Image 1 (spheres, rainbow, N blue to C red):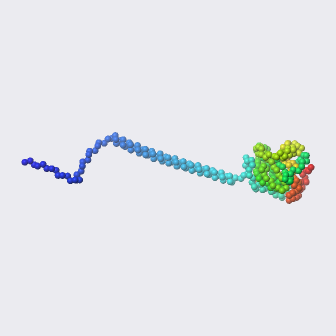
Image 2 (image 1 turned 135 degrees about the vertical axis):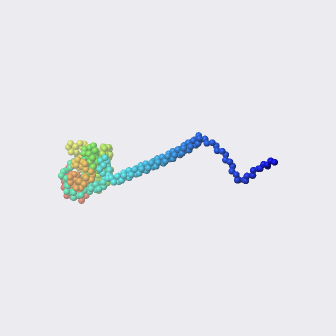
Image 3 (image 1 turned 30 degrees about the horizontal axis):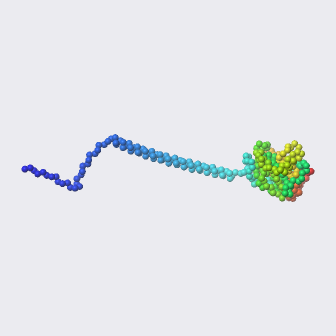
Length: 331
């Protein structure tokens, strides 16, 4: 008798394990391609990182350069400002007209009377000329008038202005005196002086009307009124001028139509190479150059006293000035 067929026992749910499917065969080419792709991606990332670092470095350098340049400009500007604040407005041989040092102005406009008295006539006498034709007194507003005609280029005008300022300051007050320099092409050259162009002179005894007809470079500056031009053409000529002097000599100084001074009264070369402070110091001491400068100022003071009726008394009653007044030629 045949044996009965046995059925396998039923599997309990969840107790068995499914068989894994067989792994697909590995493709070497695909593996190599994947590795290449990963390397390329890594290299690209590295290049991007390097480029970003280089960009940041460039920006940093640009900022450093920019801030450095700004700092340098600030330092230069600060240095220029400091230099300008510390510099003095003097002795610039290229300048035409510039602000004067108040200390120098104070010196030349108030020379010590004791020094002036000691200098006296300075050891010479200026060439006071008597105007030809015996013209009427030159006045302005009822006051005796002093007419000056010169030029900033002129070394002789530069020389004569110093004693003129000293003498006129004993009768009134200047306002607006500025440093000036004579021409570098005329001889003597570069004489340190003042400009009369644009100044104001206030006095109860005198009227002073100055004209600087040309600047340091011979360009037109002040223009004379017609009447003054006619007067100058008449008296700044022969026979009023010294023998041999040419028509139109400057400086031309008309003291109330009583006297004419044409040209400098002492040597312009005495001032050559000296700055404003040195000239003023010499005038204050009355020695060397100061003797001739102060002597000229004393002679001019005496002439001014003569046309003002010896006013002001404190100036004109000085025995030295009164003595010089008697020595000036008269008509």
